[in-house]
Every structure is written in structure tokens, then in C-alpha cells.
Amino acid sequence: MVPGTVSSIVRSALRTQLALTAAESLVLGASAALVTLAAAVAGGTAVGERQAAAAAAVTALLTACSWAIERRPRADSVARRMDGQFRLSGGVLTALETEANPSSSALAVALSARIAPSLSRAAFARHAARSSAMLLVAPFVALTFWNLATDAQESARVDGRGAPAAPGGTVRSDDAADLASEATRLAVTPGLPAELVDRLRALAARADELRAPSAQSAEERGARELDLASQLEELRRAAAGAAVTPGASDGTMAGPGARTVRDPDAAMPPVNPSRHPAAPGNDAASEGERGVVGSRWWPQRYDAVVERWIEARRNAGDGRNR
Image: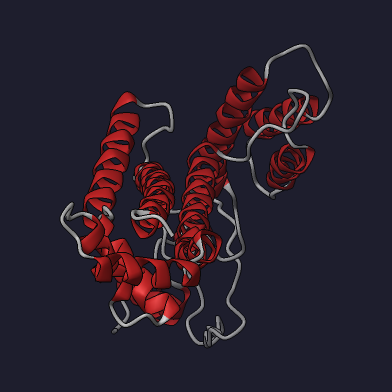
């Protein structure tokens, strides 16, 4: 065995280790860049933003350089790894150092000749590759963060703008149908003014038109849908204020002749007109007093008190004792 054989094997293993370290640095740098972009996307930044791309590039560069510097192999470190892998108890490192000395003795040459057959470049490369394979988990972790960030951004976009446009430039039919059905439902609310009903029906018709394909772009149709949604919200508030429901006049200032819906649970003792007959010729006054009850502004539970007050005023007008 010629001198320098062990050194040649170690240098070959060193080149293999350098290539693996470079690959590890690239994998970790790309993973760090993807995680940085995912963080930017999750924060609301677009993927094509220059600041996000610059931050990802700087992060990738720093991560790759840090890993390369930390894991940078040397000939003596490779020799130690080969000693541990092939169980040579420091023989590879000793042979490497003696071969580097030009005045090595015949004993050093004999050591190199004995150590060299036990070494294998291919076995060392396979062992080093298995150790580096664990870093392949980093890209999958980075992709997971990326998918989560993009999903969150898509959800935020849908919540902010409403439903996205369907392929082909049409608004999704179920959303347009919801607008139409809600407007139609509000249009049949009892007590709405005719003008408000007409506006609701017209809005329902325009919402139905969005469900049909047209030459408009997705952005234009989406803007129309948002405009209809805002108009529907205004009409809903107007309908809530204009609708008449049973008992709505209770406790309010109803006009003369307003219809009063009696609460079934309200107990109002009937007034016996035979106890206090109206004076002759005072029918109009009685009707006027009764008109106050017809246009009452008090809750129904005070009807009995008001009836007694009216009777007391009537008795005072007739000269009777209260």
C-alpha cells in the first residue's frame, strides 16, 4: 500500500460531507424562507410584496450560512467520524496525521497499509446521507405552515368581501338566491308602505338577475352583489321601523281613532253605565270623553284607572259628589 492512501480516502469522504452539508443548508434555507412567507401571508401581506420576498430571502440566506458554518466539515472531524463508524479506535486520525508528515517512519506506512482496507467511501457516504435525511422533515413542516397561512388568508378575504365569485365570472347562485329570498320575505311583512314593498321587490328582481351568466367580469358582479346587500340592510332597518305588529300601539302616542289590540292577559273591569247615567244632552261630551279612550296614550293596564278618572270628571260636570 503506497503512502497517502488513508489521506486520499479521508479527502474523498470530506468532499462527500461537504456536498451533504451544502444540500442541508439549501433545504433549511428554503424551509425558512417558506415559513417567513407564511408568516407574512398570515399577517395580511400579499405573496408578491417586495418586503415579504426580501424578508424571506434574508431569512433563507442567514439560515443557510449559519448551518453551513456550524456544520462545516474538516479533515480531522471526518477522520474521527470514520474511526467511530468503522471502529478503528483512532487509527484513521493517526494514519492521516502521519501521512501528512514527510518524515514518517516505516511504522506509519505500515499503519496506513493496515487501516486503508478497512475503510469504505461508499459506506461512509451512506451513513452520512442517513444522518442528513432527518432534515427532510423541515420542508414538510414549512409547507404545513404555508397551507395554514393561505387558508387563513382565503377565509379572511371571503369574510371581508362576501362570497367569492365562481369560475366563469358569475356570482355564486346560492348567495344571490339568499338576497332575493330575504328581500321577498321582507316584502310580505304586514303594514309596510307600498313604496317600501316596491323597493324590496325590485331588489329581489335584481338579485335574481345576478344568478344568470352575463358578460360582466367577476369584480363587477361581486361589486353589484355587495351593493345589493348594503341596500337590503337599509331596507331591513326601514321595514323594522314601519311594520305594524299586534300591540304595537301599547304605550305609544296613537292617533285619534287608532285601533287598539287588547292584551288577553290585561284585566279591565267593565264600567257599569247604569251606576252613573249620562246627563241628557251630554251625549256629545260623552262621546268626546270616550274618544280619549279610543286614542289612548297609556298602557292597557291603566285602562281601569283612566275610566274612573273620566267618570269622576263627568260627575264633577253634573254637580255630583266624587
